[in-house]
Image 1 (spheres, rainbow, N blue to C red):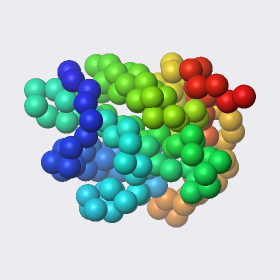
Image 2 (tube, rainbow, N blue to C red):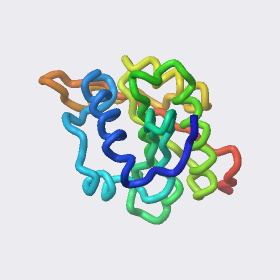
Image 3 (cartoon, one colour):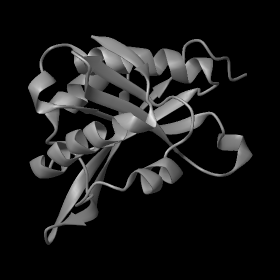
Image 4 (cartoon, rainbow, N blue to C red):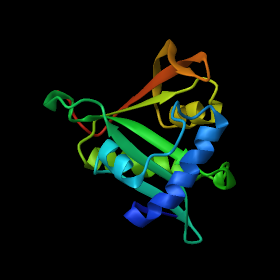
Length: 163
């Protein structure tokens, strides 16, 4: 397995992995994958990583901006997905470890994730890398006529000084 920077040509495989997440109903409120152009506008241009195995993308991690205010420049929302064929093989941990390193090198001091509490695998992965659950937003968003809770998890860098 190789973790590397994402290339535009990786997006079709990334999109297919995201569609798998949509189908679980426990990964995102989104109902369709975005076009590459929409995805490119939505995500930060830094820290776009893919996990590659046998020349195929089997996972990805990217960052969303937390706010446009300069004071929050070091805070980002993490999005991380692993294909169903690669789950349980350490891909999520490898991506998370690489993303933490890349984000700290880019000056990100806080990573946040919004996760459905039912997504125990994602919660466990985040806890493994010192993310803390800050709160459970009750009935934060609607999916298929049901309002769903969302856990807000956060990790503060141990390498970036915020004093």
